[in-house]
Image: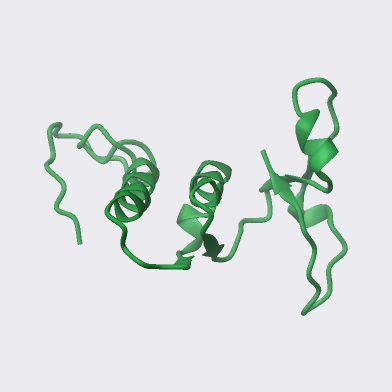
Length: 112
């Protein structure tokens, strides 16, 4: 649990919650702190609120696994080369909802 000092009177749950930091920024800070402090863990389990490209990449950067439901509008590349060319060409990323997946199917994808 982390206490949040409200520095502003307004509160918008999507934006800064009056503390000057977003929930996603706090999530990434907690993950980095756990890694920096040598907390032993292999898996990060989170709600869909935290399943965005920045958080997925943060967890991946410290070589840990992330488990959670992704939203249908998450954009992914289907290969490493598609991800590498993210700035060179348009159309290399697709919404995850456009993929044909059946229950139990596994597919390796790359987030932006």
